[in-house]
Length: 563
Image: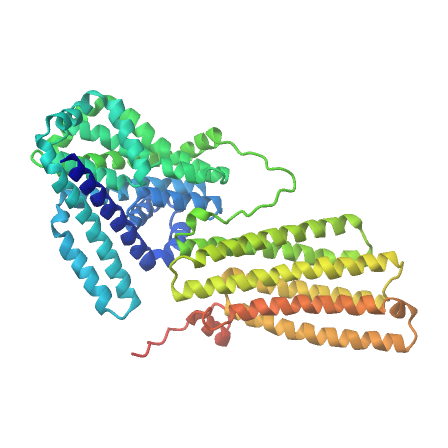
């Protein structure tokens, strides 16, 4: 009997976890593209942030998953620690929805739900409906797994040893809490653990008091995954994970001495329904934690900053700031992280270009050293970003997400090439000019400075276009590229004219001057490539097309789509 029970429990657990996984994946595909914007814009108010946390956790069906994502977003500085705390409290409330559904005995309709989901997938031609079908199949498999475990455990009611073991947990609360916490950490899902606790309660195999101790352990265990995911990340991310653990741990410590009174209250609320008793105990516990800590978020944040203080990084240490591997399974957010790292690369490139003209006016070895160090940083960050985007592309992506990843890969490469032009051409030419003890004519200096200023102007336009994914600004950058092409031609002709009239300065620096303006032209070519990647038809939204015609911030009514 024990062999059969063990195999059935393992199979039921597998169905439960797999159902939770594919339901979460389906719901993420439906709501994922707006998730990053939702978390970054709606969490400024702590009450709304708590509601957002509850909704997002219902989508992911796991407060652990929500907290891991929050660790990544906080690490990337998209949301602050104070914004995150209210979302975590909401996530703890959102995870109680599954328990309430189990109490409603949704397990009885698990197979019909799977059938409906499969029918939608097989007979629907639209991707949107297929995602809904996937979510329904996951929902059904989750509860089918619970039903299998429930049916498997039913005969164990007659086993005196097993029954005594579970019932005695009310006399060993610490052991019950630790066992439930460890089990929850191993399966990475408090919902799965709580589902099993509810099955045990509904079969009459554990008392309500024992179930409450097990619930406490499940609530603590769900915070361990986020703590591990934050190791090696930023201090802010570590504070988020620590906050989730402390919310649960402090809540358990405060309620532990009053478990008897708490059990009486729960029994009074649902006297003849063990399933609802466990579900209500879980819900009330998490709502109480949220109400207790929400008014003191600012003070709690200061405590976290004291517990997890900032650490100073080594001088000159450059590493990716926004690339978080834990977010790769949520492509919509991971792509945003890669974009922020690219913005960082673009800022370094802009700073490098702004220093170039100084080298030709008065050579400074310190500036040269700074440029070479920055170019090494650009190479390192570009390589890391490309690898990150490649990992994202191995995930199930929508067409828009795939095209966005490809566009970002091309953009990173072009920024990296600009850094290479500065290192291999600009720096080399400045050193050659200094070694030969030559100088440009006053007109030559003026023209090189004019080229540099035009490149910087184009850089600012392209960088802003990348940040806002704006086709309008990308078109403006293309126009600037045409101006730079024309400028390079005119300056080259002007240089030849100076040589014809016998300018010694122009003759002595002729090859260097022509190579410098050609180097700036090559930078403009790479910036133009970035602009072209942004104006690719798959990257532009309808609003972008409107901006191309009417200008930025235009808001005409969107025409109805052809049916």
